Each structure stands twice: as C-alpha cells, then as structure tokens.
Amino acid sequence: MANDFMISLERWQKFPKREQIGHIASEILRANLMEDKDNPIFFQIIERAIHLVDISLSDAKWKENPLPLLVLRDELAKVYIKETKNLDE
Image (tube, rainbow, N blue to C red):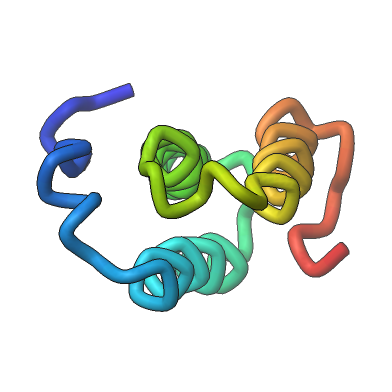
C-alpha cells in the first residue's frame, strides 16, 4: 500500500462518524466505477477503503458498535482477493 494516499488516525478522528462513512462510501463508489477489475488502480482504491475502515475501527467513536465496519471490511477484503466478483454485492 502506498502511504501517499493514506490519512493519519489523528486527522481521521476529527471527522464525525457520518463523515467517515461518507469518505469510505466515496472510495467504494470510485472503485465501483472501474470497469476493469484487474486494474491496479481498482485495487489501490479498495486498499484505501480498507485503510479507512481500519482507522475507523481504531477511533473511539466506533468502540460501542464496530460490527458494521467489521462486516464492511470483510466484504471489501473479499473483493480484494477476488472471492467476490461484484463490488455491488
């Protein structure tokens, strides 16, 4: 993973939960627009979305109910390893 597109935990924690989800959703939408799923850029976008989920899980705001993020991370990982072929799933 390239560090040039990663956000720090400190900066991320300043965002409210709703904004964090919005940023994650934006990355998923960007990935969904990629026609060629073997495109390296597609995988970079998925890596970024997973990174955003991971740092969200490190944010105290999510400690009470991390399950939605854990499910989302699992689904993104399946797309990344090509276990799931369609990001819409």
